[in-house]
Image (cartoon, rainbow, N blue to C red; front, side, top):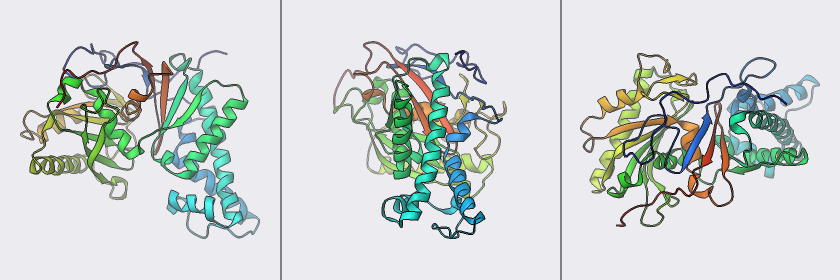
Length: 375
């Protein structure tokens, strides 16, 4: 079967760097422990549109609404009530699935089944790409994974793929998705940069929420960053407020300043770099060339450079603080890097959220972060 052709080139030109260098690069494809084989693939499906849109949180909501419409069409009572599906939180659907009336549970289960088939189909298409060939494991992240309905959908997709003889493991991401997108930023920074600090600032920019946090590397507990954890975090649901791009960046700066002030108050040392994950294809100069359509305003113009905007706005914050930017699915996947070394070589991540983020990694043989000193 021929390989699918992605919409974009698989690697931004000039985005790689030597892992021995101490200066991080935006969108780097070569990191201390992994090679990023590809990310932000934008496959088309036969009916038009992006394939990933069929396995997003929005897609699940549409599937659920379709089942409810079928009941209404035949005059049956909707066991989930009158609220539209987009207004029903995942926690409520989890409760309906596990503790609700049988018909409500069956309705939710029907949506899960259809979504699982879509997710399995999307995974099969990814595995046909040259850059995704021989993938042994796929980590499933994103906000949808955090719900029980998401976990069941992942499990059902795994069953479908196994019975079809597709040799890939599907594994829910181990950290809470909200934290994984912050913790993974530690892998963008050389360990020597983190040794002299207590915390570093990290940002996870999504199509619904902005998250900013203080991450504790805890190299004294694990040199491979497997013990890194979020010490403090803030979240802003920008989708509810519909801000301009300028307003969104200003709010993000405010969140970072608040977190830095908290660290300073507790006399905790901040690393001189901020790790930022953002949707889209990240160029070496920090521009976002494609894939940021769900963010407020236009982030894909040559006149906008997020790292430069943040660097300018944060001048004087804890010394010479600078920003390193990468794709948000890459960063979320990197939170798993310390745990994907013993039994796999080639692994990927799919993040199910407002859209479907994706990245594929190959472990660098024998490479693991090592700190030269311990506090």
